[in-house]
Length: 409
Length: 150
Image 1 (cartoon, rainbow over the protein chains, first blue to last red):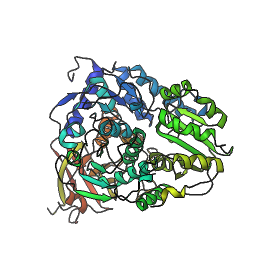
Image 2: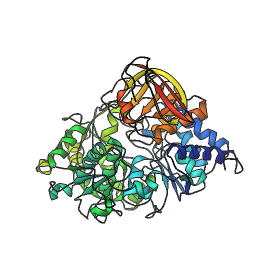
Image 3: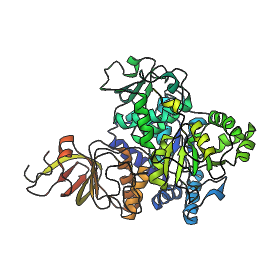
Image 4: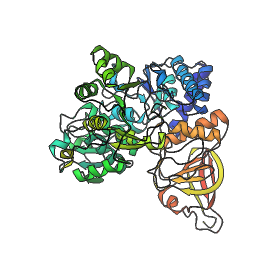
């Protein structure tokens, strides 16, 4: 491929894969079964220049490839309030990736689509939350791929034999003990982004192992944990003993070795992180949930809450999800409740990367650790982190409402 | 070494001279740096508000989003990128951003990894020279200064 016998597109892609193999000290390449590409989100002229270079060279993906969020909501284009030129560039970039044979899935949660990777399968996924989910929850194997290398792996079907593809790099290194966290809090969704934030901040380059999560922990809770851990840190894989597939026991999670560090998690520490991730309190202008993209189960939890609560007309309420999940929500007949409540569904993108919120929005409440982490820098708003129920009740009251019983030790 | 030179590993080739900006914590360029200005926009970062543009940025490691490659490539294109990145741990996401910028724009921003002691010894504000080639990398401080002693 490097000689260009497969064409100019594959030659450029292979050159980049080979350079990355060198950076990663990989002595060979492996086949990957699928790819998830993040480069379709416009970050500036360089995003377009790169995709155009590949597309002009005739590059096409050689393996099933899903696409991450783009910079605009193609199903609800009227939601975009920003610079029309940037919207046009975002759209053009999305078109270039679709033109190279990627599926127009436009979601940061490709693991919520059918045909997800199987246990032990090597894939090349980008998007930090998708990476950590694929590795941790599915037991598939992907290194932490980023923009550019993702599409190059999709074109060549190859990736460096390095990082989290290899057994040696998947063993636990740091232990988080939950024995001091009461059962009620363990069953609450809001614990998971907070725990994830702590794990990301504490783990450095060590693989975190969590001991004490209940076997009933849901995929959505693990999704929230992983997304927060990959925002506050570089976590690409975690093990939860008795929950995730490579951690049947503590010993298995650590591959028989002793943890390099141990952290004891307490309710007080969780409340401290909640407050640290909240930059304000009091009146709120908007609520945004669905980062990573809302799942069907999460819609299932939100629908009854909004059916019995009248959202304050002064508060904008957004749910970000994929077009695939939205189709399911419509099939379930739930959309009428969202229309009645005045809740805006956002697809194909997310409220913290595309200019969707009203310019007068100052304070936003969210249940997402990732949203809370990035939104202040990205779109210049103040944030309050709370559970889904706290978000809905706050949206009704127009100001932050806390369920104090949740946070008592 | 009296010229204050340390050797390291090349992640992305190039050479640059610039004043050292030390980051106390890893920074995710995506969501952490505005490629239009080079400023740190992650409000939780200890060096929030400072500009990376034209500086030899010495930081422990990369962090967070896999979109950082694009942000770095875009910053290199726009002329707001650091002069060089000096890391303690190899970071493929940052290396890739520099690599793609050199493919697309023929602008080479060195990304190098040096060991922990040498990394800790580089002094903020010093003018240093970073050279990264296929056979290895070096970071050279001002002659006679304490920066860096490997």
